[in-house]
Image (spheres, one colour):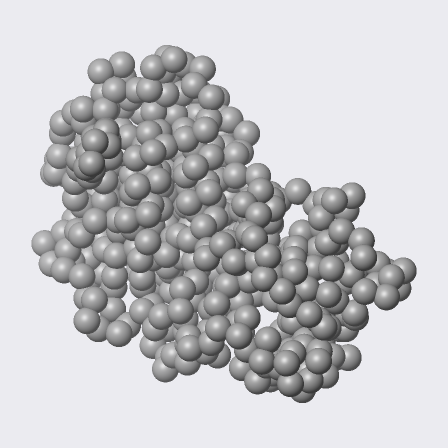
Length: 484
């Protein structure tokens, strides 16, 4: 037998189902079991290469692994069939009716426990398929090319714009009725930056999710968002790679709106193939030119005037087996990106930001007792621990349309060192209309200015008429850069 040829990644996404136990039970009964390959829609096709390999050999070995629980199994595969050719009776009953949604079925005649190989797991990354050895197909990297912002020191943070039915500002080129004093989002932001004298000092824009409303990426609303950001970048003199988009739960819709949710159906249907991410990925490709197949968890460095800023984007809209529609979950792929952030070389004084959509700390009442309520990010503890290890200064998020600043720090126990604090900054909504805001809340944006002593932070109101609004916060975060 040759060395293993393929690695397949899996996760237990169907409530009440242990993937391995189900497949092993069928293998014990019949001597062979089908393993469905739940290829993500944006992953490359591999079916012809698999068929060609099996035509050359009577069987091949496949490593099946779960990175989240660090389990691994070595399997002997004797055939590979397209969904239409596969026998439904050869796969476990929980996805027997969904074979047409797989990319094919591997026929396995053994499934043995082996030690989990972290190196191999890291190579697989967020993919579901990896050629091993000479067929190596490297996983998409978590580090993007650096962007240049010479002479600049400020970062604009927007969140929860909600283009579509919930958007409150005037759109680019929109005709409004007499007496309607609304301006465009660009007009309002630039007018306020002019008041601060910082319009020409913006190095990057970070948008922490919910570009759209309820996942409606139709041409009209998508064009409105693209036109608005083209106008804003033009006014601020920014290139596309200086705009950093983050997915929100209204961009990556995991469950139908107001529908009765069957968690099992969703787990073995579109959520397993990640079709729900496609619209956002294509939007990001148009918005900033990042390949729609690239990971939604990555690091981008911005070269500022006298320092560097590393921004780690993590997708908090990853699937977990729950009915909660607005929970956050980052998972292993996002934690890997945070780890990559911590390993970036320090060439100049460096600041590190984490950007996600969902909450890491409480901002308002958490509806945890409602089965479909709003929750914190489920793996917030792991994210905050990883962020401290990676030297994150500031974690940015949005989600509940309410501004808040908190500081998170772990005090050393059992002789362990006390970590540096992570400032957790929740931006309110920069774009939603008034009736989509919590009572008493305003449209707001955040502005950071990075300097040798720390980080200056403003949280300011964005009025629809571009006039001066309230200043919610103006202060300095004690967060000096990482020294060379």
